Structure formats: C-alpha cells, structure tokens
Amino acid sequence: MRPTVHDIAAAAGVSLATVDRVLNQRPGVRSVTREKVEAAIRELGYIRDLAAANLAKGRTYPLVFILPASDNSFMHGLNAEIRQAIVRSPAERTDIRTIEVPAFDPAALVAVLEELSRGKPCGIAMVATDAPEVCAVADRMVRDGFPIVTLVSDLTGSLRHHYAGVDNIAAGRTAARLLGRFLGPRKGEIAVLAGSMLVRDHRERLEGFTSVMAEEFPGLAILPVLEGRDDPEVAHMLVADALGNAGIVGVYSLGAGNRGLIRALKEKAVDRTLTVIAHELTVHTRAALIDHTIDAILNQDAGHEVRSAIRVLKAKADGLAVIEAQERIRLDIFLKDNLP
Image (cartoon, rainbow, N blue to C red; front, side, top):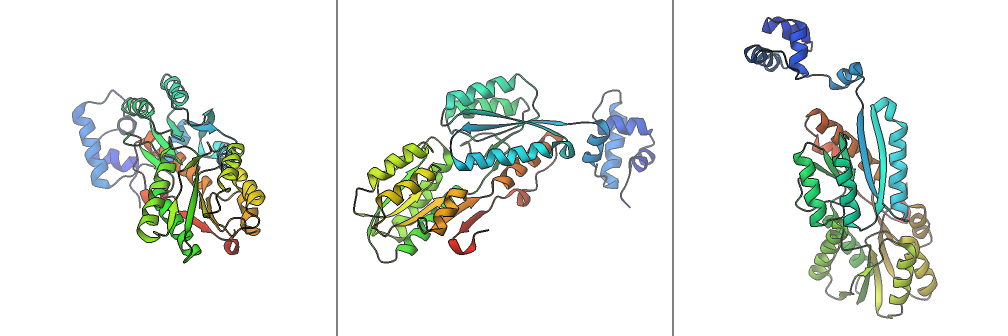
C-alpha cells in the first residue's frame, strides 16, 4: 500500500495538522519538527498526489500563451489547439488566455512580457522571437519565479524552463535529404522560402538544410533565402518572381506562407518539373500533396506542443520534475500516400 499522511504523522510522532503544514510549506512548525516530518516522508517513500491536493484546495493554474498575430494556417491551427485546451480547463484546473503580438517584432514581445511580469500568471508559453532583448526580460522573469516555456521556436541561451517543439536542425537536414534523393542525378538551383531569420526555428532549419546539401548534394546550389514574413501574399510575390529563373529544380519552404507558395507554383511552374518540400500539414498543403504540387510535408503536432507546454508549466508551478520522454515532440513526414 502507498504510505499516507497518517503514516507520516505516526512515524514522525506529530499531528496530522503538523504534517499538512510541512507538506504545504506553511509557517508555524519548529525546524526540528519539520526535519522529523521530512525524514519520515523520505523513509516512507511518500509521493504526494498534487492533483488531488489541488482539487481539494480548489487551486487553478492561470496560464498565458503569447502567439504572433499572423495570417498563416499553422498559427491558426495552434490557436485552435489552445481553444481546445480552454474547453478542457474545468477538468484540468487551468485558466488559459492568449495574447497576440505582431509577428517578428521583439519590442512588442518584450512589452507584453514586461506587462505580465507585473501580474500573477503561474506560467507563460510563447512563440519566441529570438532577440537579446527578449532573452533578457525572459531571464529576469525566470529568476523572479515565473515558469516560461518556449513554443514552436526557441530562445537562444535563455533560462526558459522548457522548449515545446521539434528539433529544427534535424528537420532542415531531413528536408535536404528528401529533396536531394527525390531529385536524384539532376543538377540545378534550390529556392528557399523562409518567414524571417529573426526566429530561431527558421535559422536552425536553414542551418540543417544547407549542411546536408553541401555534404551530400554538391550539384544543387542554394539560392539566397526569400523572407516572406509568413505572409501568403508576400510569399506569392517572392516565389513567383524567383520562378522566373529557369535553373530552379527544387523549392524548400521552411516557414509558413504556403498558400502563397502553392499559388505561385500553380501559376508559374505548370510546365516544369519541380520537387517541393514544405512544413506543416494544413488543409492547403494537404490538397497540394494530393495534386502533386508539393512532394513531402514535414509536420509538428501543434496539439502535442500545447498539451506539453501546459503539463510543463503546471509541473514547474508545483515544483515537480518534467518527464522529458513524454514531452519530446516528434517530426512527422507525410507523402500523398500516408496522409492521416
């Protein structure tokens, strides 16, 4: 049988009220008595059921998700997953709200974090813009006791508690290997569409991609990166213009803005054979896989990322360890043939 608070009280020779004070770190217990109770907890191997304790106390976890205000399908999907988490709030004892900031705008993100630092959320999850000023305020908040999780894109060198997202260097390497293998002996140029080099996930995907291309596929030259700001209209304009280059044999879209990419491919490349790798399975990229406009999609599970962020923030608020294997976000590869 699992040890109970009654067992702890008996072993330490104290009352149940004293055990409760020690477990909840309340004052009014002499240091020698506290040490007796803590020794009994260790010897008995007592593990507290925090979920039950929090339920009994009526505790809720106020959590904030900070997302970029962006017209791209992946962020719409991430928002939808957060809304589902809000629906589950009564059962999970969370109180979740979202704040949108302009995409790729470090100053706007800093302003929101500064405002939150004056309040009492017990956890913050954010899609990070990787800039020194963002890192500085996040580090200060962590030192002040705010649990912080980065979501989708990480924050270089920061003290954040956890990153809920895929290994983006591995994602870029995977994209390069798929593109190179699909192209086979063909030589030519590769167009790369990114959102912004201000976010770490895009930089890391590019790093992994260029590394494998240089090592394994020297016959394929990577053109200067097109930064579409994850905006479908900007992406359409940039890709349509780039496809005027007859030497392009492949396209790697490492960010969002894929609606614009797909439109440009259908308008400008109908008479050419291009190999196209993109990120995130959405209604638009799914249709493009089916009609052969895109050859492969690398996908991260936005629902798993949101659930992971919530679990980690609650664990940090309770002072519990995080089960790293449970929180690893996998990278899925989808072709037309294995669409879910």
